[in-house]
Image (cartoon, rainbow, N blue to C red; front, side, top):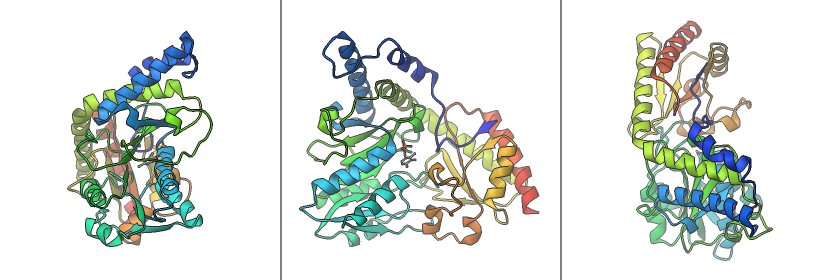
Amino acid sequence: MIYLDHAATTPLHPQVMEAMKPFLTHRFGNPSSLHAWGREARAGVERAREQVASSLHVKPEEVLFTSGGTESDNLAIKGIALARQEKGRHIITSSIEHHAVLHACEALERWGYEVTYLPVDERGRVSPEDLLRAIRKDTILVSIHFGNNEVGTIQRVESFGAICRERGIPFHTDAVQVLDHAPIDLTRLPIDLASFSAHKINGPKGVGALYVAHGISLFPLLHGGVQESKMRAGTENVPGIVGFGEAISISTAETLQRRERNLLYRRKLLTALRESGVSYIVNGDEENFLSHILNLSFPGVNRDSLLIQLDLNGIAASAGSACTAGSLEPSHVLNAMGVGEERLNSAIRFSFGWGLRPEEVEEAGLKIGEIVKRLQR
Ligand SMILES: *Cc1c(COP(=O)(O)O)cnc(C)c1O
């Protein structure tokens, strides 16, 4: 079995598992308890917060732990929308966001907010000029992702953030897919809120973080206890948070090697396909892309038949994001890029990551070539 779906989720790193183990067994205390058990759990959570903060170059008090990327996106978008509704009810996002952002925005539309969905070009890039034109007096939030989870295009977040900062509009970015590709220094970028998820970087599922820059206020989505500075009530997922801290430390230390290795895998896969003589088109931006994501269309091939054949041959890939798998809808990302029916219906995402070996990628490349050739005939 060869796993080429690291953008959907990644295997747990053994070092992460080791870090979590004590908190799944004898260190079971509630971090809010004042006795020794509680203090030990609290220390685990706060150490993880420092690991996340130092990886992102921010202050520990600017990191909120959540249940994952989805909750981070929802907390950023709905939290800002509710906190700033007196100032306006207009939000700007892009048409190729992850559904955690798009559906949160759609929910706000049902609550009377207005949302502008910026278009993208054929490479999947949002344009700063379009953002400038969309900004209104009542715009209270701009949310544009950092790197796209389906086609890998990297967005010009620095420009978007600068435009927003000049106008005093909070800028949120979904950065869930970026950490294994490039280190993110949030003190050097004009970003006010950023979402992260542990399971995309070899951490456990069900835990993530939202960076909230000092001075940005949110309306919480969960009310209850005073956890996470009253921004996210509920007893902390201590083992998950500890695992996230470890995973982000490892990922940050290895980012450059991981990027190089993923680029190598990308070249190997493309070479194998070229050599097997199949025709393919790369979807996305071939200049500025996440090194672990490779989205290909195979003209003449139906993506569902191809995915079934790949699965039968022990290769895991996906048709766009995992969250929409199972639904036979074509990808909203490729659709917005205007790639046309043929490319839309034959697009497959391959994604690489930690634990994958070069021989596996070579073997997968050969197998994919054979299968596609058979289907293209
Ligand atoms: C996976 C993903 C999410 C959702 O994160 P979960 O932790 O699975 O909720 C959000 N945004 C992007 C870009 C993702 O790739």
